[in-house]
Length: 188
Image (cartoon, rainbow, N blue to C red; front, side, top):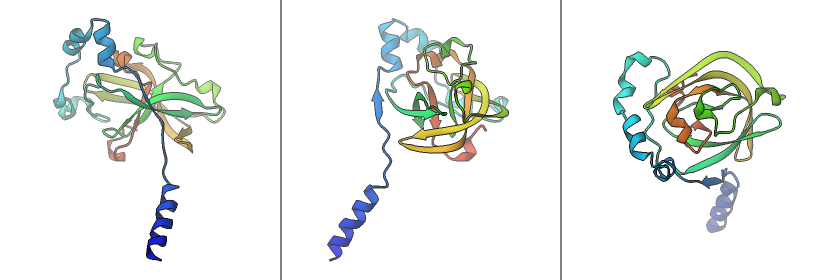
């Protein structure tokens, strides 16, 4: 009898799991090596763990290690109708952000961009956003919309829309970042 209850409990719990399909792509390192740019990239964007202790960045500072060997991304959607994005599920940061159609930096050129005008559920926040990483920064603004992850939709979720991204981000295969860390790390 106890065994049957345990099995039923496990079956019930298994129904509560959320699965986000992961996609494997070439790493930034592989792409840079194919183009003969890896050594130049390593010298131009060295990893600097001390940046998180630099007070000149003030609010919103978080360090990010060089993601050159990162290869797995999850697909999320934002807006109504949904616009899909590849994101890194980052346990070292707390912000969700994706490139916007207002992004003018070259790093945004090869990424999908969120168009607020195409979403009937998008609302402006009015606040700006700047996140400093070890190899550059992301600048943009905040908005609210429906964000869907693994089939679960969250309405009025705050997120960042980039207007400028550091050059190293052009080598990221993901469009943006979905931070999973504690809220106190959030820049918004």
